[in-house]
Length: 188
Length: 103
Image 1 (cartoon, rainbow over the protein chains, first blue to last red):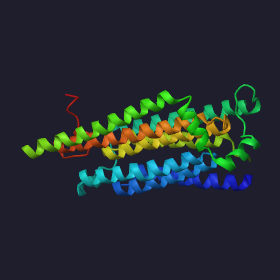
Image 2 (image 1 turned 30 degrees about the horizontal axis):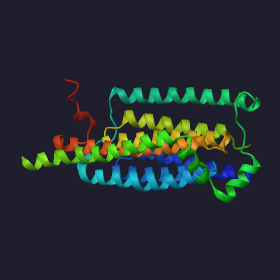
Image 3 (image 1 turned 180 degrees about the horizontal axis):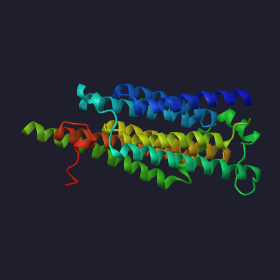
Image 4 (image 1 turned 90 degrees about the vertical axis):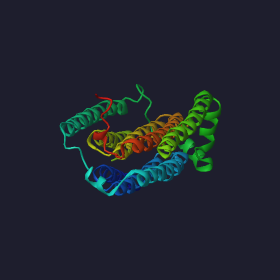
């Protein structure tokens, strides 16, 4: 069981890293969007390995379907054939980007491997443990959806309502921003 | 070798750094938005990993990951609306053409 989990994690992680690099370094923008979809689907596989079934389905619905459709439609509206030459910025900031990302990566890996192995050795200092057997049995029956729903409507009800106001504002704002310029260009 | 929290954190760190690299390195505005989505997904992996290894009974991390997903969807919708509005003025998606604020 452990070996199988490790095998699936390795497979998903490999696909995620390769396709995320592909999403950035592909020359054609549509290819990079397809690569991004593969990244999102593999991340939902990682969520399933982490006992987060509701999160995995939400990931597929929101990211791999919704956001991708938005991106592809905006590519259809804006991109012309010449835009394939907008590949990478060969400017000083490219070198800076590699330096920043590399140093942040080294810092993160250093922190993770040192600190959290200490926490693993001394679990009292920070609560890191594999999920309990009883919790796993409960999740096999009902999944995480009732737990998340209970949390959203009791403890986190204020952020939930604020989020709905944010979504309302985004609907109105996106419609206004995208529509006003269209009217102006038609009048001219 | 046992699959622990550290492996998920390393994967999320790799993904976050790829996102940062993409934000700075690319010239197409849509590709910058794609890189921001990759970074938000890396944060989601971190939240789900801590929810799994911390408190799976309450699943607080998964609740926050759902909040992040909703905000990310709002962000990409507004970003693309702004992109289309700017495209009607400039007829370009090159980030180097949008320099009018710099003076």
